[in-house]
Image 1 (spheres, rainbow, N blue to C red):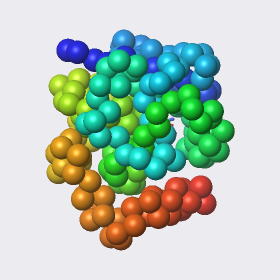
Image 2 (spheres, protein in one colour; image 1 turned 30 degrees about the vertical axis):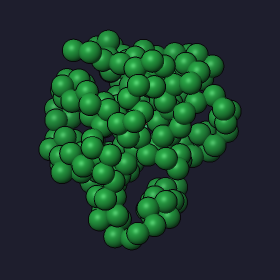
Image 3 (cartoon, rainbow, N blue to C red; image 1 turned 90 degrees about the horizontal axis):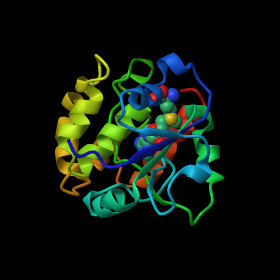
Image 4 (cartoon, rainbow, N blue to C red; image 1 turned 180 degrees about the vertical axis):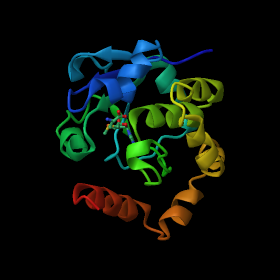
Length: 186
Ligand SMILES: C[S@@+](CC[C@H](N)C(=O)[O-])C[C@H]1O[C@@H](n2cnc3c(N)ncnc32)[C@H](O)[C@@H]1O
C-alpha cells in the first residue's frame, strides 16, 4: 500500500472515542498534529468552503506536499476555514458525495473525516488505500458502494454528477445552500 502523507489537526470539539480522525491515527493511516502551523505548507487542504474541487491534477502536489485536514465540529467548520491564512495551503473542496456515517447518513457533502480522506484517496488514484481506510468502520465500505457511480466520474475529472445530484446548474450556489442548511440545523 502506498499511502500519501496525510496530516490532521484535530480540535477537541467531540468525543475522541467516536472521532474518525483519532481512529485513523491509531491505525497509522494519518498523522495528528497539534496546531494548524504544523500542517505542511503548500499541501492540499480539504476545505469544504473552497471553490475548486479536488481532481486528479492535484495528485502530484499531494504526493510531494501531503494532504491536510482540520477535524472540527461541522458547526464551526465554515468560520474556522474562513480564518485560515490565504496563502498557506492549496484549498480544495471535495466533489459532491453522499455521507453514510451514522450521524449524517444520506446527507450530501457533509462528510466525516474518514469519508473525506477516502474520497480524496479514491479521486487521486489510491483506490486500494481508500478501501483499506474505510474498513476501520463496519459502515465504511458502504461509502464506496453508495457513491460508486459518482466516484468513477470524479476520478477521471468528470464533475457532471454534481449538477445531477444538486438538480441545478450553479454548483457553487447549490453547495452554499447545503452549508447554510447545515448551519441552520436543517
Ligand atoms: C468538519 S470535520 C467533522 C469530523 C467528525 N467529527 C468526524 O469524526 O469525522 C470533517 C472534515 O472533513 C473534511 N471534509 C468533509 N467533507 C468535505 C467536503 N465536502 N469537502 C472538503 N472537505 C471535506 C474537512 O476537512 C472537514 O473539516
